[in-house]
Length: 212
Image 1 (cartoon, rainbow, N blue to C red):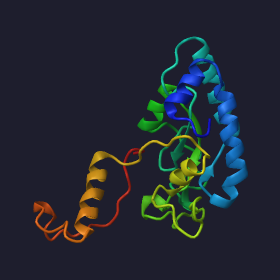
Image 2: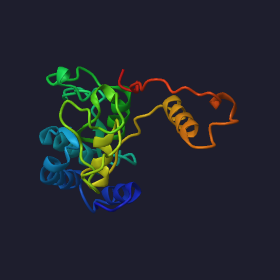
Image 3: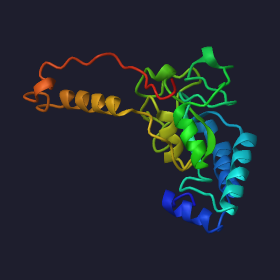
Image 4: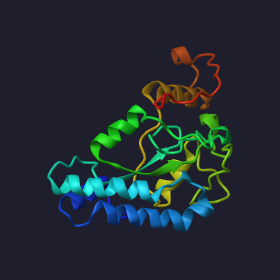
C-alpha cells in the first residue's frame, strides 16, 4: 500500500481488500518509527485519526464512499482543524486548539478522508526551507544534510518518506503564479523581455490564506 497510487488505494478500500483502520494504523506506525528523526509532523493524534478511519469504513460498507473516503491525508499545520492543535509552526500557538474547520479541511472531511496529523512548517509560512519552525527543522528523508523545501517541508518529507500517502496543495493559484514569476525572473535570460517581468522586484514572502 505504501507505493500504491491514490486510485489504487481508493479501489482497494472500495473492494474491502483493506480497511481504512488498517491503512491508518500502517501510516501511524511509520510516523511513530520515523518522525523522531525527520520531524515531519508537529501533531499526531492516533485516537482521532482511527475514529475517522472507523467512520470511513462504515461509510464504505453502506455504499456511500467517495474517491478519497478512508485515505489518510497529512495536513500542513497552517490549516485550522476542529479539535486539533493548530500551531502554524509557532510556539505562540503551541496550545491553540482549532474551534472550527478551515474550508479545505471541511472538503476533505466531506469526502471522508482521514486526518493523519498536522505537519511541520516554517513559522507562519514565512520561509522556504522549514528550518524556521518553532518546533525545530524538518529533515529531508533522502539526504539529511539538505533541506526539504518550505514552507511546507513537513508535508513534503512526510510523503517522500512514506509517512503519509498524500497532502493537499497549500498554494492558491495567485500564489502559484507569483512563484512562477519569481522563478522566471531569477533564471538567467528568462526575466528579460517578458513584459511584466522586466525590472521585476520580488516582494517579501507571504503566508497562504486557505485557513483564514
